View 1 (cartoon, rainbow, N blue to C red):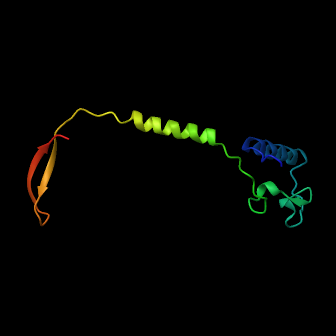
View 2: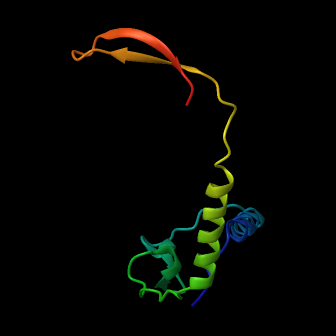
View 3: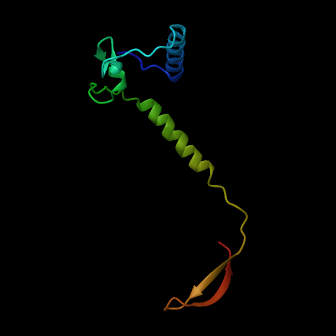
Length: 106
């Protein structure tokens, strides 16, 4: 299976094509309709996502376990507590109207 060209390779190819075009006088050639989408007379399979066979995936349980352990480590590490400051809590009646404000420490 061929590797898809990188952006840098595509840029390099386009630059080379432009330089050849300019060196040859910069004349526009007549190309048959649809021929520009062909590579060596056939469609470039790398440019199409559909139509390629499905790739088999390799399970990597060790890597997944390492990622999960790091995720649990981060959540456990971030459970430190801030200094306890009182905050305002509003007490509501049965109809949802505020009755009074109290300060609570949680």
